[in-house]
Length: 103
Image (tube, rainbow, N blue to C red; front, side, top):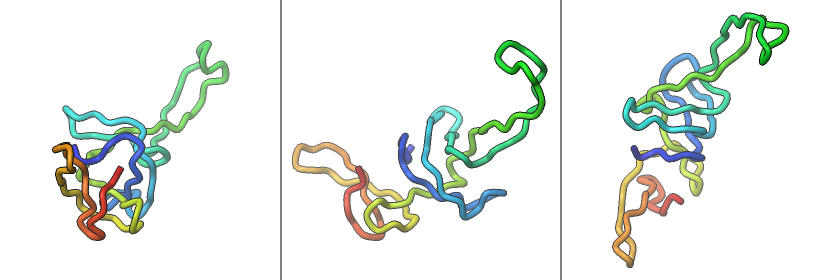
């Protein structure tokens, strides 16, 4: 996957289209990622020790990675990701718009 944990992403499809968030967790086998504050759903919870009142709780659900695009930290635009090799022959991510390395 070209998106990593702690990257800033912008949603391009779905109910949260246009919103920006930070990636919390990645699920590479299912091509999903968990973005903080995006794709929130409500869940009914019974009374228990962890939820003494019970009721309705908002939870964050993972979303498909093809519904988001990376926001370049240099040019602040949503962009595709390319790769380049540095002097030590290690692969680095590259912004396709401003052609700078993404860390």
